Image (cartoon, rainbow, N blue to C red; front, side, top):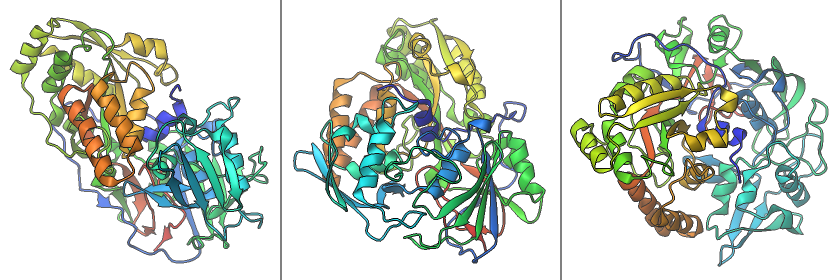
Length: 515
């Protein structure tokens, strides 16, 4: 099925706002090393926490299946629970306790947690999950869930109040991981409206006031099944400008600003009570390009490898990430289970030129499509163009607006596209790439290995399959992951309890507060 804009945003951890990079393309290093934001400190009970994220203006919504901006994702993550979350690269039980696959992988039994109540006090049951599956996948929805690509959600059967049977569309050995990767939230049976009075969830906080494009006020839900949150009130602010987010913390209007640009981190915290923090190396985001292997010259694996050899990864990290990261090894999925942490290719201009000659691509004219979805996309595209010109390719950056970036016909005509993905499971990453023919690599060995990885029921078989996938991509793949970027935030030093459940750019604040 087509890849939705929401799925792309959530997968990559992309921000809506843009900011100007620091001038110059020379090497750069952070002004000071960011502090790793761990969940080790325990926040005190009571008070309030004010957090600001990039918003979508009047499009901000309490509908968990209509969310499309970082502030939506963060806010709705504490209002509604998921069946499984991703923690340290693996599926962790939340509202669901287990997803047990049938021997042939063509269905699974979904077992639910007991003792969960909705914000209105009614019990959570299998009816709620079945309804949520139908609601999220309904064709009339603006952004139907991609979960239906894996599961036949229209044929879910309720076995009892805590058990469902879900048929799959292909053999799936670890359905919990797929459910977790798509952040499958649960809404109450029959819910059709999501206003401050009708948005009922099972999460750690419930909404008391909501103004799209401005703020949401959430109060602690003391009957939360996983233990009540720390603060009495969580205020989630929506701002579109990165500098405004940073200023909100510096001036005391907010305690936490999520996903700040590298240039602003480099400028420093601006206060002794505030610090720049990082989610840590494991949660770095892969920045790169995907080459279109359906048209010349990149339908030839020699031309694809030539580009990988032509890229100066360190220069891109220094100039675009301003030193907040490290070179990538051309594989997406860093930080997730079964990722192949191999050494990046060394730049070899002479070998790149030789491969281009052999492929008949010497002097070829190519376009690389980009937009400022993420701060640094356009700058990295401009730098890539300069580096590829050194090996004889004539590169034209095609800089477009955000709304038109993933237009299928334009992608099909482009030779490459900027792309980034956070630490999502490998099955989801390769499903993302396969969603558009111009991003996919149509390789039989690769496709067979991906299918084997999805169907595998034991870790040994999964590791073998995903190793093969990454062997193929390292040898003749169409992804060029030049850098692994830090996920940075600006926080008061007292902020504690921020967790990563999925992607670090959308932290979980259900246990956060002030120490």
